[in-house]
Image (cartoon, rainbow, N blue to C red; front, side):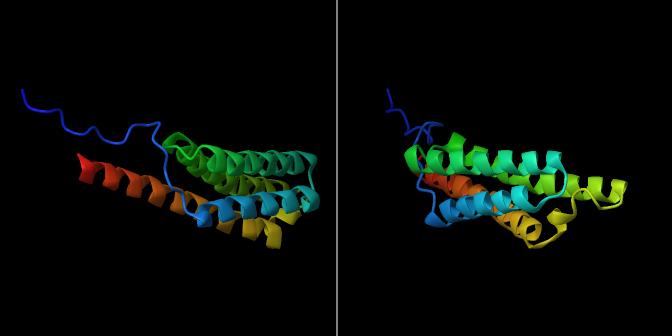
Length: 137
């Protein structure tokens, strides 16, 4: 009976996310924290605060247990950050721009740039892990 081939990387396998990803998620926490302070409407402040707290939790998870599920969650967080920026801008356009004027400033632009970079780097980490698993198998 032939030997079983080496299975591909399991979902629980530990990854090696680059320190750049940790730095980007931490920068995202800072940017969303800044937005929570300067954004005009209470709901926008709460949204930014929640995203800031989520980024801090993700940093801790990436340090403690960098498994594919956590890296995928990091990418989803980045997508939600970008979507929140676009959603808040849509609300600003619908209401005349007054309640969420802080989101168009430097904190908002920094947050959307960092969040989109988080998505890109997370996808690259997952792609690299998948390619390494294929080479083993």
